Amino acid sequence: MIRLLVYLVLVVLAALGAAWFADNPGRIGVDWLGYRAETSVAALAFLLVMLFFAGVFLQRLATLIARDLPFSKEKRQKRRSEKGYAALNAAMVALSAGDKKAAKSLTGRATRLLPPQPLTHIMAAEAARLADDHETAKEHFQALLDDDQAAFLGLRGLIGEARIEGREQDALELAGRAVALRPKSHWALQTLFDLHLKAGDWQSALDDLSKLTKAGVTNKAQAATDRAALLYCRAVEADLAGQADTARTLAHEAANADPALSPAVAMTARLMIAAGKNRDADKMLRAGWKKNPHPLILDMWHALSPNEPAHARLKRVEHLVAVNPTALESHLALARAALDSDNPALARPAIEQALKTNDRRAFMLRAELAEQDKDSKLAQSFRERAGLEAIVAQWQCRHCGSRRGRWTPHCPGCGRFNTQHWQRGALDSPAAIGTKTRPLGLIGGSSDPQIPRDGVAGEPFHS
Image (cartoon, rainbow, N blue to C red; front, side):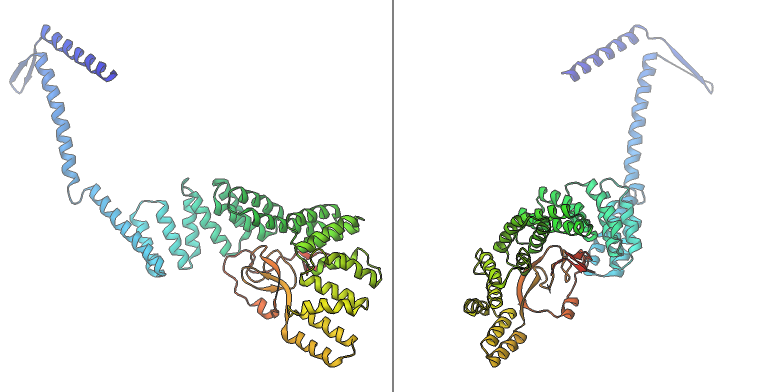
């Protein structure tokens, strides 16, 4: 409606102007080179308008003709772009095929032909990586930081380069920038979490874990066990720093988050006993034994009454194993306590149950029972079987299968965090543990975190 009104107004104004020129025709004369031309003002105005439109038409015509010329600017730019993108596509194929020389040459050609853009920098950086030219790769990733839309890709590339070169602190700083830039990026959150784990910054890792859980990157069950492991790591540090109350609180929280984490259960009980809270320690140890029986828990159970006679200890062990009577550790604990109290009648059935698992400790207990029966030949036979079977309980990684006598935050074989569980199996030799394949770039793949064992300086965590 408004456009129609504007059009009508313009028509009216044009009509009024024409009428005005008709009422005031006037005369215009021009003398030039001995000639004189005369016309009316209206005719001159019409001629000027026609000349204007003729000029516009000629200019448009010249532009169209120029565009169709073989060497026009537009044609040159088009051909240059086509060659550049063709080189870029060929570079992608070369990268996929692992052809270092061709990939680097083609990406260089594409970079020269195409205007600066994120895609060319990314391809050039990947080609440089393939050729082990990390300085060039870093230059291209750095160039991406100037583009708001591609800055995240640049940070991701620089983080990768920093980790390849072992510059973990730089990688950590860059990961923080990446999370600030893209707070909901699963990759950025996971990378920051991994780097905080590698640095042993357990509190920051706990904060990262909360974000990962909220973002749905980590399921709640895994988050609970990871949180327990992180809290336990903090408890160990606090204990080593002489902060007993803080250590006890953190260890207790870790044990509640994951009762199967027996080192945390044992540490909580030890600190409770030291604080005179034996009743709380008793409850904690029973809950831990029910979830995951472990020799550490049994040691703390004995520590509740360190000077008690053997028969009294047997009674207390019977109370403990009653919460999980079918477990191997329960059979072994009961057999040990029965042998110590000179009660072979109670020890024998427990040992027989344990022998079904071919555990080394069961063979050794059976040999001890045979010695009490004055059967040295049978005792020697079971000792030999203990050496040949070599079935023991150890901490085993769920990911790579490497086994170790003590729990550590990171697997000594593959470097992954919190993947170890108490498992029976053939004993790995120290050489085998040290030579397992360690995937490139995994967190903690180069060495074990040197956090002292709970209560024993110089050893990482719990046996």
